Image (cartoon, rainbow, N blue to C red; front, side):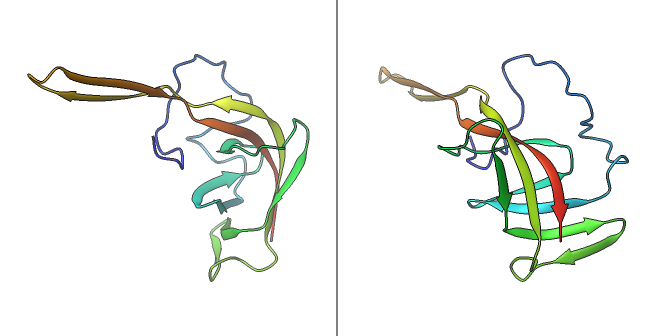
Length: 133
């Protein structure tokens, strides 16, 4: 799996979340592209996203992400060089989650070589509260 979470989907069935519409963004027009330890994510206010595991983050903690690469608002876009000065994204930690199960299978035919390894990436789920900048 890509460490940035490019592989989407989950093996577990989860109930739909209220207020989050991944395909339709008419409710909130403010969005930002953040840099989370080398991975870029597009976030919107009120959205729940998976970030890389934050070891000491407890549910209910407020975190601030200062590395905002781009902010878009109703047709106007501010692009940072490399970050937008004074821009912040405030989020609340919901908890930890596991990504989808991935299987790495190594196989060589006619040589009796088979190695099967599984992996599930750990994430910290956060809810984006406010985008300022």
